[in-house]
Image (cartoon, helix red, strand yellow):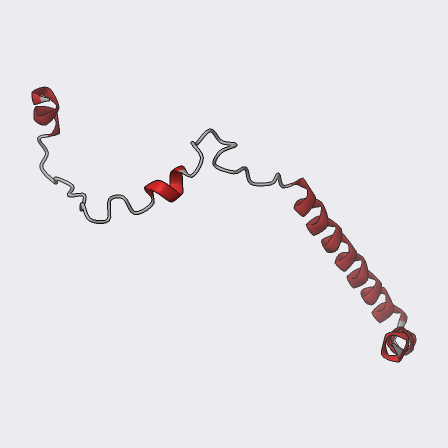
Length: 90
């Protein structure tokens, strides 16, 4: 607890030993840190919570039941340029 009290004192002592121009720079930096902190707090509050799959319209446990369902059945992509012919045949 004494460290928490001593830090502000030591910070003040250091600031008081600086030139007025350096003190101004310290003040600018402190204001920057406050602004940055407020910005991150505001951003964190403004981001909506991620919706669950059920809230997005997916059936309950859909992803748990279907995950990995194609792992034993490899998907082979045909590189032929005859897609239109295959589509007409179907």
